[in-house]
Length: 416
Image (cartoon, helix red, strand yellow):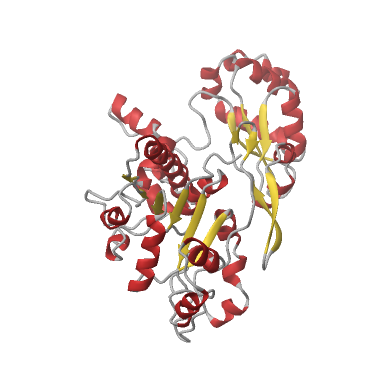
């Protein structure tokens, strides 16, 4: 199912947040053309390019890049040159939308800001996703997922009550920014289809984080006091936590959402004394005695693996699951039952699993049709097929380093 099959997007993004947003559109069938340069390849291909890393093809084997850029076409264009800029403007002229997540001044300095793009395509939809917005006192700050997390105040809400603020270090700013940007760009494209009007969409990634900690501002507004940190505990559910199991670094997460579930948990642990204790008959009492209950649950879970404990509790109707490492997700029965993993063949890495698109359209998931592009893989198809450049013109562009298929090595000054 390809609801965006007639949409073309020029993708100037790098890293996680922007490529994730563009990938959602590609999974829906949009023709997404990812623009890199041999001198400035997507930094998720690798942190640096040296003779050693190039010989090992690190720039083509990085899992993070390959996961974020499937279903896209890839071209290289040196946008610091007039010819490279002119060619990308010709792509924009033929596109419906543009997305970028560069640092705030980069696109205007390249002559590729929204006002520049409107001159060649008045109906273009452009989405920019700076970390802290395009205007205001923080506009000049560069943002990454972790700094955006700090800017949103999330670490203040994370950690133990008597401990310091804690950063999750998952770079949630990237994931949240990418998902929100995809939704915003879809709205812009829909508006364009209905009215023919383009627009500039400025989505600050820090704002996309606020829903994760919205209880903090609400608490502050209602009470005038800073919200307390609560560790793994929940404001309504009790008990809730992560408990040690018999295996090495083996943990179980449990969340009791009702009095009935509490009774089921106590019976499964064979703790009739707890089940009949009036102190724990309701959530308020269980919150008060949370420490005692945590110790009781941990005493029970230490006698078995997290998988065994989860199966027992799930069978009794209690929400529980093992805490899985990344590599364990590949064998998770729940994900397998939902067809979550789809294998794609790619040069330099072979067949690798990819997460399926998280949504269904008319009952079908978006197709994973081809892997992330190698550097400059579609130069001929895009520059020749879409822009009509001859083979001789493309060869000349390669000879002078405007296009290529190998990341630039500064010391050797090599170009593909």
